[in-house]
Length: 113
Length: 454
Image (tube, each protein chain N blue to C red):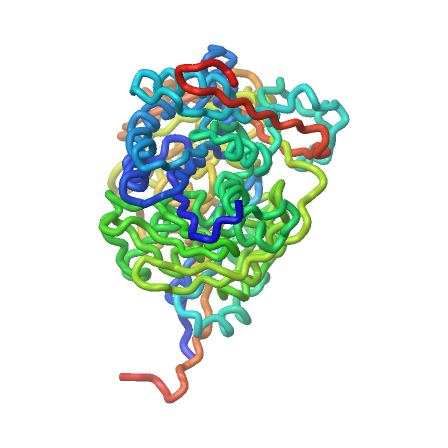
């Protein structure tokens, strides 16, 4: 295995509904889905987003498109209308997901080059 | 109607003041049947309601006239019907303005439908539960500005059946703008949950304009390059009678449509993918598949659905006080230490106001203003730092005092403070409740341009 940042193998987009922020995890290659799915747990996400989120963080799978959705309650300091944050919608926070470190399995047949 | 051919829907806008030109390109070259405009974010309608209070002929989308002046000629020429929630807080006034515009542009006989009934201020009871606070409507601290139910497809379908060329709505569920023409053209029963669910998936993919065609996607060095963002194409959905569709865009426009850009939009602003709640269906996104179907073409299928909810979501907006903010910057060595020293002094200076400030916040732009408590300590000293102080209060005078902070520190601040900016804004507080479906009564009115009300 090799240790990489999640950003190397997946991307994330953040959205908002009221005081709820949702952040996706979308692997670039569907062949990476199974191991990303196993490693990107609620605990890993709480370790990164915990200081920003007052409520629970829920994890959902979209097996058809091979993606994850994390729903964070109480994440936007009251939401777009009331928050004192500069980023009213929390759209720039999706990037934090990419800082999670994951263990990428070596492809079968060994490392190339 | 039970049409058997493909229906072509264009996503003409994803927010209040979205680009007009890509919608014109869609109307001219998209070979469309319908061009749909989603222009109402959560807060937008309450801001429009404030404009309506100031002027009873206002309160609709501020870009409506410019948008339709540009889009009407190609839409009329190509027989493209228009559906938009650009009526915002005053759909009848939007229709008045559109009818005048269409008459002026020489389109007599155009039929414009107005959908109202989303404004439910008169149907509210003080004991309605508010989701966010766990209390009741009566407990909300500010004056009510707006209360709008999310309407579904029914009034839009009624307007389409009556032959409307343009449909003006206020608050409707975003995907309903796209689902309505599918229901109308394909004759889907309103309890065909599977097809309504799949159609809702397609609507959700189309409702945010460039968010599915390469906007909010590019990460240089990680994603593939997204060409020509400045002339990005807005999306087209080619929908089959079973609700499966291809998402694409006009060839020659900028942007990209790939399974990844579509996945990004599918998961955008959703909660539990098994239960995407709309007034028309509880859509199930879990089985959705997005597969490449040639260049800038992605096939979408597999959406499901369950019976629609018995109640409708209502967004309640109140006057919620004021936010004052002030910023100032330092450059070069020591900037961060100076900003921190200033923050400490400002906090002391504002101490007498603390009991009327609901919330006080300091940001160091370039250090922690975006990632907040999750930001790591900077690895190296930043080249420059911008300090921001912001506070919310029910008292406008307190918000003004916070906004004046750095001006008031002009002679006192640590060495070399500059680039001061400040502002005060009124806060709209947004809350959610539900009303039983039967308490919400959508109405449709049809007007013919150059004629009287039908």
